[in-house]
Length: 353
Image 1: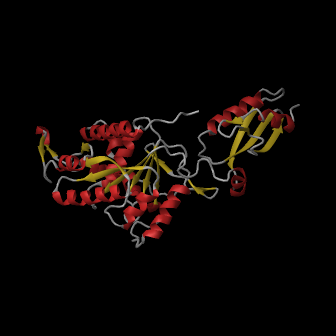
Image 2: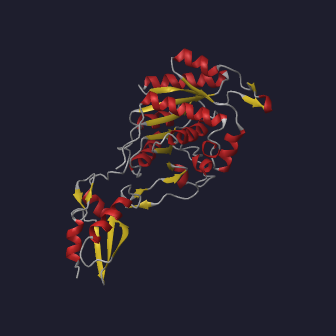
Image 3: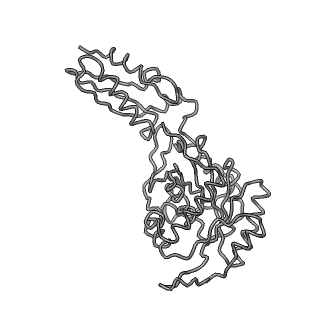
């Protein structure tokens, strides 16, 4: 007859591949119940979002199933307490941004140029390249990513840590999840910096190939505070063709260069409108602004995005164009921008155990 001691000994063969210690020594095995050869093991994970969850369950069943007298094995999952986590990990291995490979911040010199639309669809285009991608809404004053992704629920808290919401293959976090839709915020730089630090450090981001950050618009204190808080970030500047937008983007480029922050390139939004079946390009806001800015600054023009009703409808409906119509003309432009950034920034997928 199998005993709890035998089960526990068998589980010492199941090793966490990252911590190089077995589940018993890590105190992840909480309870072992045995009845007529049926074994139920209660396994405490660091988080129910643990990427190794399925592998642990399969390994436990395999190890216990080899014992004489065992007819079936059931694994019940729970979560470690905050005290257990603090004892096991001075810093949780999946908490914060330490395991994020690349950071791309989407910025604009002024509001109203479609910065958030670009950030969302760029993140989705990167994810389509088989990358693990997160999206952080750092626009504290106008957090619109929840609406544009159709995410209204609040993130769960597990062991004192926030779990990002997941939608369309992205891990998403926004301050907008924690405030009422009509609530106005009047914040100064120090509070913005503190809140952003929490959204980066107290969130279970885990392993990400890329974290796309939607910055506040403009060149004021919020943008500076946020940009300086993100390590080794590369900025994508969003503009529209008209001169008033270009003037503000020139200022923003100067600001980031003064701060020694890398600028990956320029995206020109609302470049033209395709008229009916003729595909005639109508340049409502002028033409060539992005190319002019590229030549002046020496920065690459990553792409020119047309005025597409699909972008507007997707944002209003919470279903972005890159998810709903990825093979549309605009979708292909976003995918081209993503490929250029992947090449320029040497973004690659992390190996998955």
